[in-house]
Amino acid sequence: MSIFSKLKPQKIIDGVFSGIDKAILSKEEIVDYSVKAASANLEFVKACQTESTPRSITRRIIAIMILSQYFLAFNIGLLGMATKWYEGKEIITLSTEAFATISLAVVIFYFGNHMLSQIIPKFAAKKK
Image: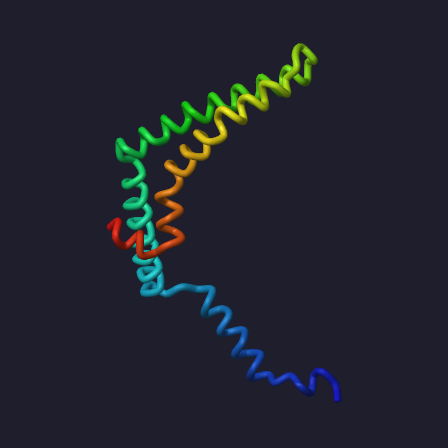
């Protein structure tokens, strides 16, 4: 029994034509896909509009201001250790102690609302 005896010509031809049919879209299919794409784009625009409110922008500015202070102090400590200019471990320790809690609070404040709505869908429904 060879491989060619197991092949059915009608099945091969049907497979080729179904592949060609899937590759070429009709006008109705193009319209359907366009409607789906437009509705997905509309949902994206609505989500982006909720993230551009003055409250969201203020959150971002506060987060950048506080976290940049932490990163600045941490990088000064690394620079001091690299150049052996001073004991950089002290500054790294102090910056971590001073900014760890506030940085965590800012991250939770900034990302918490979005993450909570992702974890608990019921919360997202109440928000709308």
